[in-house]
Image 1: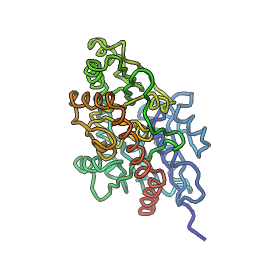
Image 2 (image 1 turned 120 degrees about the horizontal axis):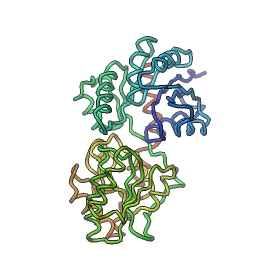
Image 3 (image 1 turned 180 degrees about the vertical axis):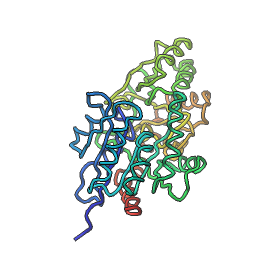
Image 4 (image 1 turned 90 degrees about the vertical axis):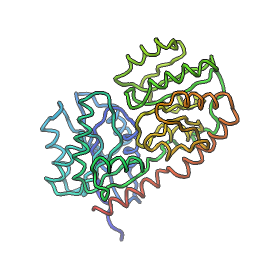
Length: 365
């Protein structure tokens, strides 16, 4: 008779079903053969369930909704401590800066092993930057800190997190094989897609600059931007100043991102900061070549000249030239897209992520 599965309580602070949430919800699906069992605790502000909570419920996952009335709500911290102290939770796991800060105190009070996950940082205002600074301080007290790329691991060490507690667990590509295509769209207007939060670290302003250059050689090109965030109005004004408003489509938040990928000939990622981007994995799984900046874990996913093109951060001219090469060369686009789909299937499977997590749980349980 084998050992019973290790109980893991995963605490997540989030609203939309973004990349980290997708990864966690997939890992939390019941699996009778898995050496661990994951239950979820998700923060909720206000009376209506968030899209993240609705997604967890639709999957019939083991979920506790934690009311969070306002920043610093003491009841939230108390509820997390109560859940961690329950008999079923052998390990505490936290995602997001609020959960990571509360996790430090909950783990100390309950004396249970704690895993903190870092998914990257956003830079939209000084308050948020302060929150991430607090997170970097808090996770130094964790038994293990999980990051999603080697570059994030190097940055974490520079920030003061002990190298001995850091572990790298690559994101999994969650696109179902039967939903993937092997050839990017060739019908209609040539679409370059950008998917991500409309905040400074994603470089959407650079995507607009790139698009202006692209229009000089491909006048029918369109830039489709899927996402929402604090920079929406400023970016719209920038597009107007650049004279490209008529060829930019603001798609907002999209649940059906597969449709965005299917409509695109190229996915552009001009980020200033990344962990290990789910967007790149999803695009490649759909056979769409990626043009991205060489930040964070991007070069660990996109191989320059093999599955897409990688350019220096902030280099609008290099990004635009790479996009134009792909728009103007269907055979190259097809070859890179097919290679990307192959690379994702080989290196970024959900099974590999499960095995890596199970190994870490075994270290600390």
